[in-house]
Amino acid sequence: MPFIPHTAAERAAMLEALGLREMDELFAEIPPDLIDESAAGLGEGLSEAAVGRLMRERARADGHPLNFIGAGAYAHHIPAAVWELASRGEFYTAYTPYQAEVSQGTLQLVWEYQSMMTALMAMEVSNASLYDGASALAEAVLMAVRVQRRLKRRRVLVPRGLHPAYRETLATLTAPQGVELRELPFDPRGGHLAPESLAPWSGEEITALVIPQPNFFGVLEEVHALTDWAHAQGALVVAVVNPLAMALLEPPGRWGARGADIAVGEGQPLGIPLSSGGPYLGFMCCRQVHVRQMPGRLVGRTRDAEGRPGFTLTLQAREQHIRRAKATSNICSNQGLMVTAAAIHMALLGAEGLRRTALACHARLRDLSRRLCALPGIEPLFDRPVFHEQALRLRVPVAGVLRSLAAHNILGGYALGRTYAELDAGLLVCATEVHEERDLETFETKLARIVAARGEVKCPIKPNW
Image (tube, rainbow, N blue to C red; front, side):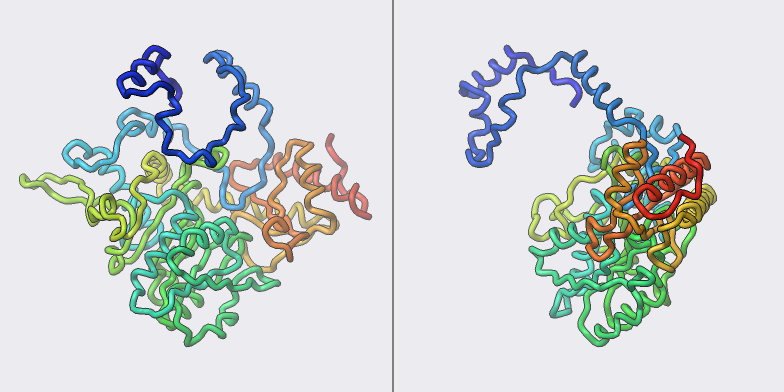
């Protein structure tokens, strides 16, 4: 909180009332080996004015670089009205809406959010919400295990082209549940999960297949063929999608003959700033038949005794809060403020606005890719269609190129070698609607100079220093 009101005298009075002498006694139950004394030398606290100045100086030190990193978190234009409205007291300080009679505004907003998410995903049900995209995927896999409890094995197929952080989170949260995660390789030419590569798994007992769209490389997957294959094996399909991309691409509810069973993803592109990594929100949609296994909150629209429309929490068992061993999930809180921003953002842009934004992102990426791949020593890493980001292959060390770009105030992309050893020459770049023509030109010019200096080719562009 920005202001802690307790004075030294008030803290002393509290300790006296508790029969304690020192503040440390309040935390006596913490094992000594868990206490970190490394912060003991921080010195005395600063005044409010001094702290404000310090933080402004540090913010200025961060600068305002041109950002061409995507990799799961994206810079988009957010209309000013989004956070002007989301920051109003009735939204900003609203508490968990257990009591419907005093929470109709919050409940209606959540219901509107759910309605828009089901329309965007072409699914029947949406919850409101999970922590982030990675934890939403883990919850979706555990949900699939519950739906498929008749199976003897808890086996889930996970493409290697899925976001690395999602794969790590999934492994962490499902390991205690005895879930067997089997990694599927991506095609070295296309960067996608080739449907024919699933042949060895045909006839095997599979709980679910995870399908990203687009995948971490920005590559579009063959979602229809993958979905139909999974259903033919008796497996569920868990879609992991970029919500903005779904305004342009086929939504998961229409994949294959039956559609995906569960759709999750990161809601950050819907009105939420990058914010140094959070808070974001995870969304989850599913088919109606699976709704009783869905974790998190679900708001329904109903009528009261006098026939007036109203909203209330529904299908959330008490076990969620007081009998954890019997709960579908131990998630009890959510990202309500982020849901508020996402709902306002989607309402302001509408279906056509989201579609135009997605088209603008794709156009910017195509322009950036065309510019960069025209430089000697740079070419596309994969040969399939992409959205939002493009993986490039460089003939010079990627890490050095990124350091040089950073020196010129440009965040030039994500080095794929950090998480894919076999793609050490790969650079993942991203462009969205916020990038202007001059931004792309600046990136192109600086990169041309750096690549020429590090390689054996001459720079074909006259740098504009």
